[in-house]
Length: 186
Figure (tube, rainbow, N blue to C red):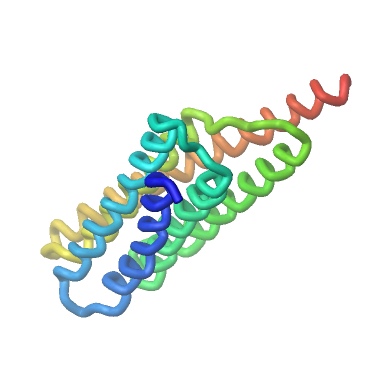
């Protein structure tokens, strides 16, 4: 197993730790630990891809594990934040549902030999989602006034992520349909 895949597996291993420190702790500093672990796990997503490309070690296992690790990380953090009543459930259902739809669309496209590349807006969505999650995790670690500002800022950034999710979702479906039209000759 190459280094990049080990880093991806490490990210998956960190997910239950984040959930534990968020949901099963009563001390405020535990949320700081959860935020730190979440940040480290998020950064490993950049690192594993870079290493795989730099060392020319892109593998099918990595192509499978990386999106799974990404979805596990963000989905588990978002669901934990719903449990902590830091974010409305409807927006989490929307974000996770969108990810399932796009994954399904990409699988269908791949089965037809079509590759749908990640769009710039989708990358912004990921950055906003990670930043929003971090702000919401940190909102449980501070005084009431700072808590309020962190929570409101976290919601605002998550709403930016949701906006990017809508735009990129439309782009993905449009790209897919354009590819289908090209391959079918219509």
